[in-house]
Every structure is written in structure tokens, then in C-alpha cells.
Amino acid sequence: MSEVKILLTENEMPEKWYNVMADMPNPPKPPLHPGTGQPIGPEDLSAIFPMELIKQEVTRERWIEIPDEVQDIYRLWRPSPLYRARRLEKALDTPAKIYYKNEGVSPAGSHKLNTAVAQAYYNKQQGIMRLSTETGAGQWGIALSQACNFFGMECRVFMVKVSYNQKPYRRTMMEIFGSSVLPSPSTETKFGRQALADDPDTPGSLGIAISEAVEIAAQRDDTNYALGSVLNHVVLHQTVIGLEAREQMAKAGDYPDVVIGCCGGGSNFSGIAFPFFYDKQTDGAKVRLVGVEPSACPTLTRGKFAYDFGDTAGLTPLVNMYTLGAGFMPPGIHSGGLRYHGDSPLLSQLVHDGFIEAVALDQTSVFEGAKLFARSEGIVPAPESSHAIQCAINEALAAKEAGESRTILVNLSGHGLLDMPSYEAYLTGRLEDYPLPEDILAKSLQSLPQVG
Image 1 (cartoon, rainbow, N blue to C red):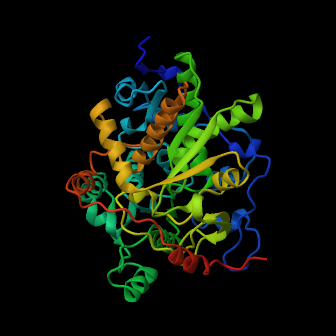
Image 2 (cartoon, one colour; image 1 turned 60 degrees about the vertical axis):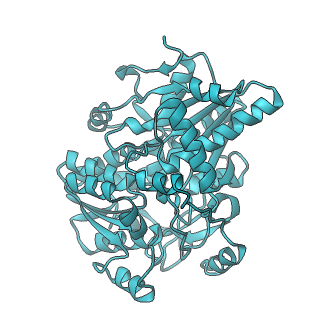
């Protein structure tokens, strides 16, 4: 077996997803109806989600079978490889061992296809032929476009305007797979027109794009809504990452001291971290779990743990999570996939209860880490994934300073080959840090809904 690349065979791919709710000491509080403020039931979600996904949203069953049709498509790229980053270790002159799980090998170039395929499948099974969604940096839009293409479905994507302009090739990839892509806010929806009237120069946000996609889905019986992060069923589907990584680490004869992933809505970090949380709860494993977010959008590190809407218009249920306020307008940083005001309720609860750590990094330091990783390992990481990489570098340097061994597992959630404008801005010195001012955060949090 190579000491650099650790592979699983096709037969070793997980056949079940792991549901972290089965092992949480404090499950999240129930979602609330946006109109009544009362806990929602399945009928409240059935207008935009298929019943099987609604069941996955609420179940506390530990293991959920992955349908054969989903596994067949997963086999296009799964199991994804795990690498030992020896050249990066050498560049850092560290005694730490660094492993990275490469989710950039998927056809979409990121981890997002793990849930896109599952969501398209369950919708198609219920007779839905059209999905609407939002996307930040574009990884999710590409993934859902591909998944809808696999199942012969239509897809409409509302892409946050700043990313629509910054990342035109991601938009082109969505269109290759048959999706219609609109900059958000758009003139196609009532809320989009309102947002443009309020601020014609708005860069857009994931909260606004979600509002537009939900509005479209609610208007047509043949259309449902699909979300690329945050919700319980999305996080569930992503656990194939961590389940594979556990087996690969065992093949390497190793086990991580720390597991790291970037964090926007929480799906890729939770996907790699939650199976190791299972080890903590059932076997007493001492592994640390660290989510990394941008200092410009510091949801877990500076947000408030409270009920809030998942979108700006207030169309979605209220969920208990760390939030910066549904009306928060993040700056146009180049890690567009991390520009979300809230986080997964499951992840938020585990952070609140002290099982998971969170850190925030400035984007210039993140691109420094990305450059070092690319020059060492030969892979250009997505700006989002680079947050996790820089945190892993910091951990490795801390191990060096302390003169101790440390095994680090990081999720490389996607490649950055379609993010060259961001790298160009960094290399030409046009990239700036945007630490969130306290007065802007305080003002945004004042708009949180009052929940009894």
C-alpha cells in the first residue's frame, strides 16, 4: 500500500449514511412555522420537499440506507481518495502528519454532488420533474445541475450576483448541464424585484437567493426546492465523506487527533466530522473537530445562538442555529460558498454544547495557505477549502513549536480551477481582508425574530 495515497475499493463504499441526531445529547430545537411560530409538521414542508427527505429531516434512526440508484451514480467518483500530504509536511518542517480527503475528484469538482444526487433521486421518485435552488460560489449549482441531468429533470438556479460576475465559468458549467441560471437578486421573483428596488447595486446574498428559489418552488406543483447545505438531510448525505475517511485512516494504520473542514452552511465540515463525533460518543475517541469560517462572515465564532429564518424574505421555517441575522449582507469575499448568515442546526447545537470548535480566518491568510498547498501538493484548492487548509497549516506549525506529533485530517472539499479570478486578485495584491465590524454585526442581530 502506498504511504501517500489511500484508496478504498468500490465494494468498500458506504451503503448507509450516518445520522448524528441518534447520538446527540441535546438534539436541536424543532423548526417553527414562519407564520404561526409553532413547531412545523410534515405537511408544512410537503409543498417544497419530497416526503422521504422530510422523514430524513426529523428521524433519529442512526443509519439510513443509501438507495441503489444513488450508489450507482456515486460510483462515478466514490470512494474518493485520501492523501498523505508529505510534501506539505516537508515544506512546513513539521513533525505533524497531514492527511486530506479529496472531494474535488467528483464530476462537480466538489463535495456537493453527494447530496445533489440524493435530493434529485428522492424528488424524481415522488414525480417531481423540476427543482429550483440557490448557489453562492457555484459549486452547489453545478452539482444540482448535474444531478438533475442524470435523472432527466429541469433545474433553475439563482446565483448570488457577486459570484455570478466573479465566477462566470461555474455559471457556464451549469448551463452545459441544462440549467437556467439567473443572477440574484433577479427580476423573476417578487422578492428579487423588491431587493433590487431597495438597493440596485446589491451584491446579493445566499439569504436573498434562497428566498427567490423558495418563491419559485411554492408557485408550481411540479417544482420543489433543493438546498445545498444547512438542513439535516443535506448533512446526512455528506457523511459518506467521513465514513470513508475513517476506513482509509484505518488502512493507513492511523487515526486523527484533529479533523478540520471549512464551514459556511456546515455540510462539508459536518460530512467529514460527524462520523468522528460518533467515535467520540461511542468509543471515547479524543479527536478534536474544528470548523473554519471567514472572519468576514463569522457565524459560529461571533453569531448568536437563536431562532432565525434561513432566508432574507422570511419564507422558510425558523430554525435554532448560530446566525448573524437573516438580513446580514456579507462583503463580496472570494469564498462565496461561505457567505451565509446561518449554520446547520445540528452543527450549531454541537458547537453550543462544546463538542466542536470553531475558528475564523482572514481571506489573505487563506490564500497564502492555498498557494503553499498548491506548490507542495500540486492541487489548486477552492477558496472555501483553503480555509480548512490554512487551519491545518496552523495546527501543523503549532505541533512543530510544541515539539509534538499530531495527526491532522482535513477535508479538501473542492478544487479551485474555476476560481482563477480570485487567485488573480490575490496574486496582484487586490485582495483585502474584511473583518466584520462590531457595529454592523450588532445592527444585523437586532432584526432577529422574537420567539417565545
